[in-house]
Image 1 (cartoon, helix red, strand yellow):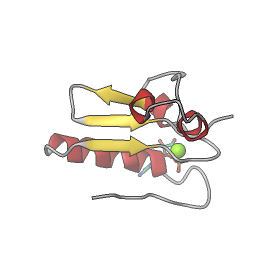
Image 2: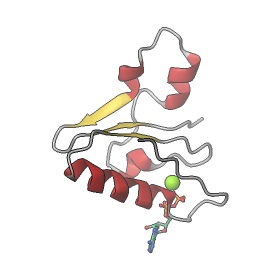
Image 3: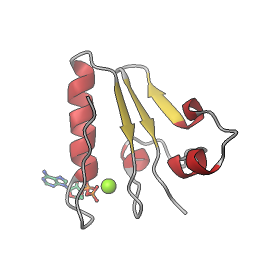
Length: 88
Ligand SMILES: Nc1ncnc2c1ncn2[C@@H]1O[C@H](COP(=O)(O)OP(=O)(O)O)[C@@H](O)[C@H]1O
Ligand SMILES: [Mg+2]
């Protein structure tokens, strides 16, 4: 199952809804991968207190030597993982 959350303006709750949906699904034994594709303000990593993660979706798309798993940050407590969005 793939869910894509899209809105035009920022500040409309995409990140908060994504995190809540991911937590809900992970608690119900789904394996969850969140991909932050926000072109302007990829802030899921901040919401998750991950700080400045090394590899982003942008790096993954522009560096063919990079394996996808390098940009995936696992949460071992819940079956969820995360890939940070594009940030200049
Ligand atoms: N359902 C909601 N009720 C009240 N405040 C919310 C709700 N969803 C998001 N917010 C608040 O709105 C702001 C923007 O939410 P965010 O998820 O970061 O938006 P986006 O990712 O679309 O830019 C945040 O301060 C967040 O806490
Ligand atoms: Mg956001």
